[in-house]
Image (cartoon, rainbow, N blue to C red):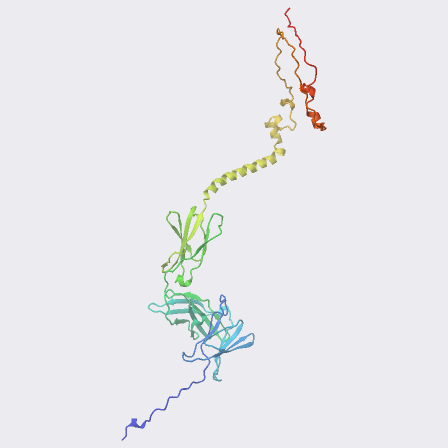
Length: 430
């Protein structure tokens, strides 16, 4: 009797073949088409059938009742036009009986969105647990998507959940201190609506950097106003609890104060004058981070202004009082002036009796001395001096100025009879 194994023959050669591709079943969007994206476009995403399969895809969009077909689209994303109503994806040369994967992109009412989204970490695990509350309406499914801060939109991850299930355990190796954006979306045949995205950490750590400070315009003048920027999420590594602002003036010890995490400006009215250095730190529940770049100020001395200000105010008050009195006294206080002041002060035409200008001016003249015996003077005749005649002028002066102001020859003593000698008798006393 032959053994059973001898009845089998050899194996035939291996034959390789490939079936017609099918449409992708898991299609989703990156971004919220019903809200603002901060300038970032929404993408239509789908998952590849396998790493070894290279396929091209055809994408359909319906925009304002018209179909827009994108041929030969590579795997596995495509930009979504604005005002799109629905989208579909199919593989090129797919089987004709394979239905398209349609996704309605019509935005439903805000009441349809899930709310109360809570993300929590699991002790001893690197996964995250997401829970939420269902909105109004009967959704076909819920989709939870997440992405690490800074990742491109193509790296979005998502899971689909059947209706009635209001929690999801997100698979993956979530790192501590890394922010993740998590969104829950309700999907129905008529459209979709997403909840506001939340940022969560599997484990919060202390920040890696502090805020950057800069000075604003003083308000009021002389009181510095400070502003600061937001610490990036990947450097914050947790949820911000508060800021700490520190100041140091000269050789004095530094003084610090806590500032709410919801504000980004502050005024510092109590800083002493002179050089001052400011810096700020950020804190999470895990601790306080290092200080950010310091800001150096030089505050002027305002005490001098405070000392001068009262004197200036008093001078202005006195000036205003004087102006008021000046305006009020001519009409209202005329009687008081008449009673208090002398008459010669307030009367318009002064009395000449009160002035010394009308009295005659008497000048004292010395009295004449009585006559005395005069001595007899003897005068002798002398020879007349030869007078040199002045040279004749080359030209006669015709100017009236010379005739009027130049001395005449008689005045100069050049003309006239020679002097004679006279004897003056000396008077004798009787």
